[in-house]
Amino acid sequence: MVSPHPISRLTRRQWLRYSGLVAASMGTTAVLNSCARWQPPVDDPVVRVGYLPITDASALLAAYDKGFYRAEGLEASRPKSYRSWAAIAQGFMDREVNVIHILMPTAIWMRYGVQFPGRVVAWNHTNGSALTVLPTVNQVTDLGGRSLAIPSWYSIHNVVLQMLLRHHGLTPMIQKPGDRVAADQVGLQVLSPLDMLDALQLEAIAGYIVAEPYNSAAETRQSGKILRLTGDVWKDHACCVVLMHDDDVQNRPDWTQRIVNAVVKAQQWAQWNRPELAHLLSQAGGNYMPHSLAILERVLTHNDHDFYRRQGAIQHPEWRSRRVDFQPYPFPSYTEALIKACQTTQFAEDVPWLNSLDPTQSAAELVDPSFVRQALDSVGGPQAFGLALDLNRTELIQV
Image 1 (cartoon, rainbow, N blue to C red):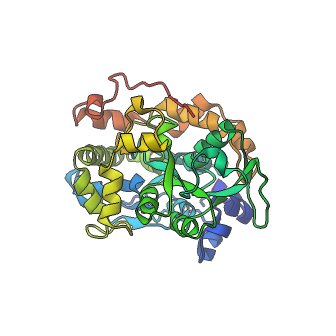
Image 2 (image 1 turned 90 degrees about the horizontal axis):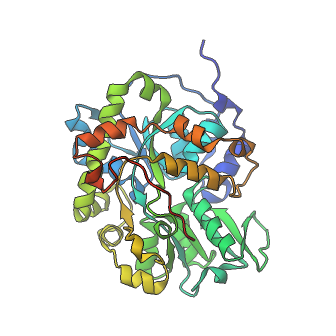
Image 3 (image 1 turned 45 degrees about the vertical axis):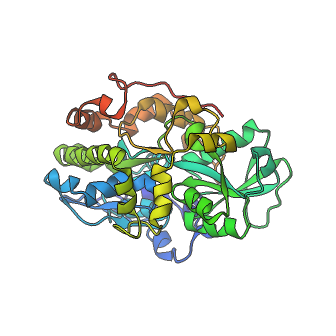
């Protein structure tokens, strides 16, 4: 008899607090009712990818669409789109899918907050997010007394945003319905990316911080402007990572290696074929995202450092960070620094499990970089992505 998995301890209230489903979406009863289900390991040879329609998923989608999974001898079904981070996390835990891109802090929450055995095997991309605000907002201090949206409490967006607010003398506030926001506070609430766009258009919020192409979409609509690119706060950070089931990683290492090989090759292709990638993702191409080619081209090919420096969105031009870039190696230094940053970040619930984590030990348990190391050998080594040969780096965070 299979013992109940620790996920069964996740209560409805905990799930609501994590996901922001109360404010973020409708029709979630099935997701919430399934929280206590536990599906045992399965030996499924088919690569079943789950994704949200954001550019963070590019590598997983290109690996399918351009045949990189097939070239590795893998059978793969068409990637399955989810509307929210809560839904994709639940789909992964229910084994609807076996490879997902997920917010790195959510991967930490899944393994340690509810003890679900997931393993990070690669990064999907670097940078790729921004703080987008109403056209009348010109600096961070203008946000005092107002509300901002984030995609999840367990997101790099929440972490970086709170860094920015504190640096400018503002206090992040977990905003609940009916709460008033003081002049020295900024209310934070969770919304889905699609809802963010509409809320900004209606000026129901002063801005949001989220992955592309929703920042580009606001620019195109002229309903918002980018106040700061997140890659200009934390140099070449990962937002989303490739997460697989721990039992697959341990018991099917060859299958896992071939998946990572495909993802690494897809990222190398994406680096040099950005216009084609934009078309592939758009409604005009593979229709993986509900966005026009123009919006996705702006994200993937528009890299006007001078414009964004004048606007203030880029304050570290010497970093030469791309708006969205691709490299697969999951640096341990990033995971360690992220855990430390999360330990000083506010969440919608108490997180004693997070505060008790040892960053170095947890990084070693959660992330397995060995598959990417081997995959890099087949594409020309770390230098193919401009990485140091020893695959070490120092995290650079400057608010």
